[in-house]
Amino acid sequence: MTERWRVTVDRRVCVGSGLCAGLAPEAFRLDPARRSHAVPGAREASERVREAAEMCPVEAIAIVLADTGEAVFPPGD
Image 1 (tube, rainbow, N blue to C red):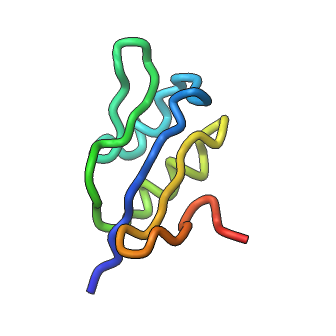
Image 2: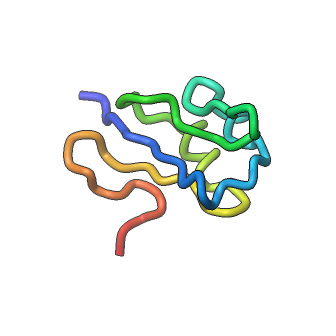
Protein backbone atom coordinates (compact mmCIF):
# COMPACT_ATOMS: atom_id res chain seq x y z
CA MET A 1 0.00 0.00 0.00
CA THR A 2 1.28 3.46 -0.88
CA GLU A 3 1.95 5.91 1.93
CA ARG A 4 -0.45 8.87 1.97
CA TRP A 5 0.36 12.31 3.35
CA ARG A 6 -1.47 15.39 4.56
CA VAL A 7 0.37 18.63 3.88
CA THR A 8 -0.16 21.95 5.66
CA VAL A 9 1.34 25.41 5.29
CA ASP A 10 1.60 27.81 8.21
CA ARG A 11 0.36 30.90 6.40
CA ARG A 12 1.45 33.14 9.29
CA VAL A 13 5.04 32.15 8.54
CA CYS A 14 4.90 31.88 4.73
CA VAL A 15 6.79 34.66 2.95
CA GLY A 16 5.47 33.84 -0.52
CA SER A 17 8.69 32.72 -2.17
CA GLY A 18 6.69 30.43 -4.47
CA LEU A 19 9.34 27.73 -4.29
CA CYS A 20 6.85 25.11 -3.12
CA ALA A 21 4.37 25.82 -5.91
CA GLY A 22 7.21 25.74 -8.42
CA LEU A 23 8.55 22.39 -7.18
CA ALA A 24 5.23 20.65 -6.54
CA PRO A 25 2.37 22.49 -8.29
CA GLU A 26 0.09 19.51 -7.73
CA ALA A 27 0.32 20.07 -3.96
CA PHE A 28 0.64 23.85 -3.47
CA ARG A 29 -1.10 26.99 -4.71
CA LEU A 30 -0.34 30.66 -4.15
CA ASP A 31 -3.17 33.04 -3.25
CA PRO A 32 -3.36 36.61 -4.63
CA ALA A 33 -1.15 37.78 -1.74
CA ARG A 34 1.42 35.13 -2.81
CA ARG A 35 0.93 33.13 0.40
CA SER A 36 1.08 29.40 -0.16
CA HIS A 37 -1.58 26.91 0.79
CA ALA A 38 -1.66 23.16 0.39
CA VAL A 39 -4.16 21.64 -2.01
CA PRO A 40 -6.73 20.02 0.34
CA GLY A 41 -6.90 16.30 0.97
CA ALA A 42 -4.54 13.40 1.41
CA ARG A 43 -2.10 12.64 -1.37
CA GLU A 44 0.36 9.94 -2.30
CA ALA A 45 3.83 10.41 -0.85
CA SER A 46 6.00 12.39 -3.24
CA GLU A 47 9.67 13.30 -3.30
CA ARG A 48 8.77 16.64 -4.91
CA VAL A 49 6.47 17.52 -2.01
CA ARG A 50 9.12 16.49 0.53
CA GLU A 51 11.73 18.53 -1.36
CA ALA A 52 9.43 21.57 -1.33
CA ALA A 53 9.03 21.23 2.45
CA GLU A 54 12.76 20.80 2.97
CA MET A 55 13.61 23.80 0.79
CA CYS A 56 11.00 26.21 2.23
CA PRO A 57 13.09 29.20 3.35
CA VAL A 58 10.98 29.73 6.50
CA GLU A 59 10.06 26.10 7.28
CA ALA A 60 6.33 26.81 6.89
CA ILE A 61 5.43 23.38 5.45
CA ALA A 62 4.55 20.31 7.51
CA ILE A 63 3.83 16.80 6.27
CA VAL A 64 2.15 14.06 8.32
CA LEU A 65 1.01 10.54 7.56
CA ALA A 66 -2.66 10.74 6.60
CA ASP A 67 -3.58 7.60 8.55
CA THR A 68 -1.82 8.29 11.85
CA GLY A 69 -0.81 11.95 11.95
CA GLU A 70 2.79 10.91 12.52
CA ALA A 71 5.28 13.57 11.43
CA VAL A 72 7.07 13.01 8.13
CA PHE A 73 8.53 16.53 7.90
CA PRO A 74 9.84 18.07 9.94
CA PRO A 75 10.76 14.74 11.54
CA GLY A 76 9.32 14.12 15.00
CA ASP A 77 11.52 13.91 18.05
